Amino acid sequence: MADTDFVKVAEVGEISPGDMKTVKVGNEEILLVNVDGNIHACDDVCTHSYASLSEGDLDGEEVQCPLHGAIFNVTSGEVVTPPAVEALRMFEVRIEGSDILVGPAKG
Ligand code: FES
Picture 1 (tube, protein in one colour):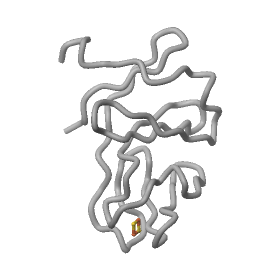
Picture 2: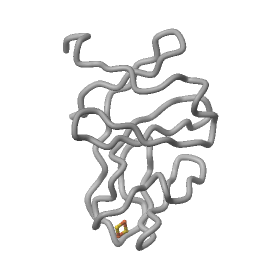
Picture 3: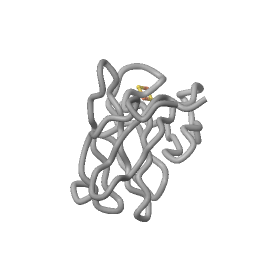
Picture 4: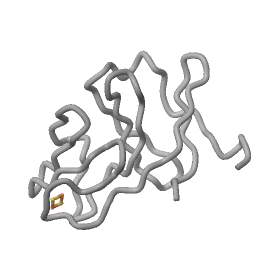
């Protein structure tokens, strides 16, 4: 994978542990989540219908959709609790100095 696939989306200091933030990369809305100091990047849009997970509740590594309450694990993208059945896509993350870079979707 070429380094040029990674783009700076935020700075580490913008997202404290337990915080999340939505960034746009091209047409993708990506949710950055700081779980215990590690930044994870997944789809911001719920796979069930249309809602921004950044407006939901984060509890550890689980985010709850604000619309119908589905819960996803933000470190794997997996569904923890329905009604969503489809996992979120995860994106590659790189930290360079104080910059957070996001790359292509994993898998
Ligand atoms: S839109 Fe997220 S659970 Fe329905």
